[in-house]
Image (cartoon, rainbow, N blue to C red):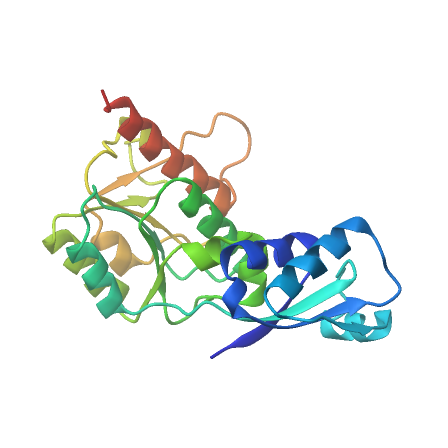
Length: 249
């Protein structure tokens, strides 16, 4: 069990909304009486958690000098699921498969933002790599704003093997890359789908790219050459949503 600290009104509210049973302790600034803080304390008390009233110095230390807005909680971090869990999930799907695959993504801010977008677009799960990549961390949870608790995250040791297995089970693997003539808007994303995004700056690894059924690019009409990883993920996932909704009669 991994324990970590969350702080600030929005992350604490997200924890209360999505994973209240994973909150183990709480600390609050004894010198603050604002309405928002009082409401959060009331919700914690409803769970049987009485926040320890303390001074700002201790809260600063617990939050590692970040802006805590007078409240810090300790939570059990969500656990990454396994390759076996992924196979079980795929085999039990009753909807058209929709997965996001992140190849060696290392920035926890990007992973957190991707989880939030994946949740918003109805993705069935996010697949990440075990090595040379970030897992679920306090920063990921804070950026995800609750999505780290609701979105299944599958950590795999051999991504190429996992992609082969997905294809063998009827899921099309489509990767985002610049070296292709096919844009995302020319790609059929209504099929059972795994969208693959490469790492920051480097893109997909060669073995990952070789497992893709097709590649697609996002048209760039201005002067910049690329989008932030999490922004690009949002563009791709929402295009899939647009296409899928347009087929609904």
